[in-house]
Length: 357
Image (tube, rainbow, N blue to C red; front, side, top):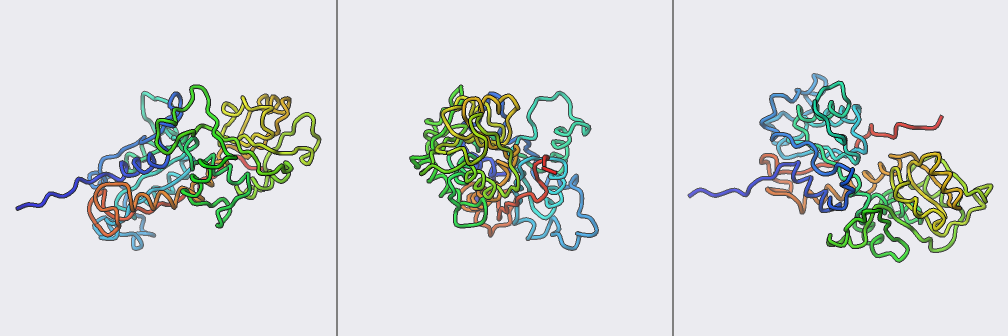
């Protein structure tokens, strides 16, 4: 009598299930965004012949493809932007694992293309990942809209609540519970409105956030909190035309949108005291100032990247090793793509391309 084994699920599909559990992809701005599983390779074993072997300098440190250590470990690599240096970092780690997947907050494949050549940066990413049998996924605007996501993480910093841990660090479950149930946090939606009510646990979610402060504070205090939460030495600030200095602005409410937030926040000008986002155009900032709203700009990816290490890494690793996925997710198996421990690693190379000199 033969015993049937449970069907296995690739690391790519396990990661997709975990991402969708945390940030339902139906919340994404799908009219223009590109989220979900973007590159799904053949199973790692079938592509073994095209994965470059370890270099001589690291060969003795890395498990061989047949070793039990390699077969039991899988890599999920987190980055904000999958640039060429970040991809090189990820692919250098991949030979240590049975299979690998990259979760890039910004989708590296965004616009359609008719050919694939290494001369184009986005196409080069796709070619290199496919050749190395590495999956690529992106949550992008789903992670902005969902409760417990990037915008709630920013809101947490604005109100001055840490998580009891390091700068910018808070547990996902704690963050989601606080944001979704707080009387001082509400979501902002844009047309067409996100149909969050149809997603269990995401009722009222949306593309941005408005935070009502427990007590009025000065803009200088808000700026200090944001810089501390994000680990920044500098931010750019615009004042309302009626103010001459930070201390002239009293803050009772803050509109928040990670990344490039003008399209989400523009309708709030004059009704909130501050916009917090990564970037806005010159004329968008002028319009906010004319309406009486201050603007705090942190540069685009600085409003997003810290979430990966501060919130997502720990939750995603726990979820993939305990809840999501077929086969053995408990960490003591050694079979195929599905079995074994998933290790979630955050890029050390990824950074915003802009800096102040």
